[in-house]
Length: 358
Ligand SMILES: Nc1ncnc2c1ncn2[C@@H]1O[C@H](COP(=O)(O)OP(=O)(O)O)[C@@H](O)[C@H]1O
Ligand SMILES: [Mg+2]
Picture (cartoon, helix red, strand yellow):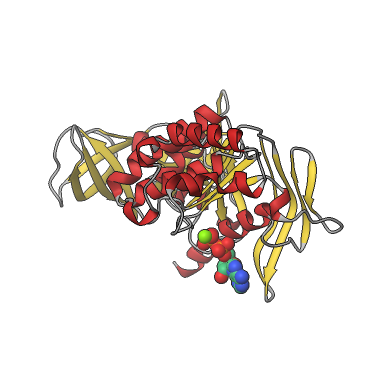
């Protein structure tokens, strides 16, 4: 395993930027997810890391050694990086064991070592009983395990996974997530996992890099992304809840500010003196009959154990939890508890436009 560093990595296709000045560090042995909507540059970043393509500018280092920069380019086969795609890319005419042995054959490892490592990799991925099957005789989840075993067998310095579960059904995805987690725990490999599914990213990764339009908008552990998003995009893309324009009114001590939110004065958590937005998660909203902020119920979904309410208040749509069912159309009182406030410079222009329209 090795650390992976990106510095000023930029890539355009026909003049359109796919990656715009990506600078980020991934620690040795870390499990990082790249999360973002389709077209934001996730696959491009993986392809540059693997060496399938070259950056226009910037550098990529692995274990401290330059893999790509304006002066140098290490070809993919010399990077010792394992790759798992959503299309499993198995050899159809080779058995499971034959597929898994392939990277060791290419590297001309001795027979005894090859057999031992293949047996280990099959065992680790729960495929020992399938060693002699052909890929066509396997389910999607089993094929993805073969792809994983094949990349584990040569002890790569990093493993890149590009939406590896996108072709599997929901139940299988959940069990494959456990396989990835176990794989990471047992190998300690540096892993970069691309997905557009936030549930997957938040469940699996030590840290998540949220991407939009070729940029990393925030790179943080899952809990932090959820609790302390640093801009409107991340607040809206990760987790549920609302992103609401707000303005500071004064200090409240201990890294807190009094803020005007939905016409109410609220204490907000923040790390900036001039926030202009708050992220209101369901956890930040308490239902209380006497609260002056009134909301109309527009939806009520039973989640098992509790209900999720969709609420309309001051022209915004909010999401809250309730232990009791609410009727669509009824009016409830809301109090807001310690939302997270942040400054988004792009939000200001959005707000100015909204005010001009009003
Ligand atoms: N080989 C290519 N030629 C032209 N445009 C490309 C190529 N690869 C990617 N792009 C463009 O770069 C952007 C990022 O693509 P990609 O990295 O595949 O996004 P993601 O994996 O996040 O969906 C998209 O606008 C895509 O159309
Ligand atoms: Mg992609």
